Image (spheres, rainbow, N blue to C red):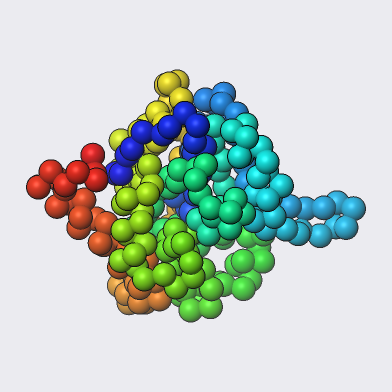
Length: 245
């Protein structure tokens, strides 16, 4: 975990990477009772009967209030690029995110998309009747680096460097019992619980090895990013590396 204090004049921008305990985190944010904004990836306009807009559009709408310090935090499926572009820089915000082992995250995304919890699960199942079909046809690869890179195609080592040095928090879903409370403490002193954690019904142990290897191959940037961070975290435990606590 990367953890740094948040200044009183800064807004916490929590980047919600899909399938990284977002349901649990939203429950804790709501419980905290702090002023916050949920940045929407898209919105349904009933008059037009269309889903329109992007996270950038919503961030631009929220920009005056964000810059005025009206929110303690903003949260949503927004990329780091979205925030920087929409706010003309990131001086007023500090970034935070939870990450997850890329293969487990990918499998969890398929499990959720094909479950009754997903509003379009029937369409997803029709398009991707198996995990293997989802792997080969789905465009949602390298999601971690997509959300965390400063510009498209940024070298992985540069993403790691900036995350290590500029983020006030980076946690792991695999250590949610330790990392989630640390994130919550950045904006709230209330007690938390993790009962709202969403869990899929497809475990990595059920997936054939060839499929796992194919997921790793198609998500090579995410695998590289995650492995670098985990290796450095291990080094920090052994050598008192100061960026990790």
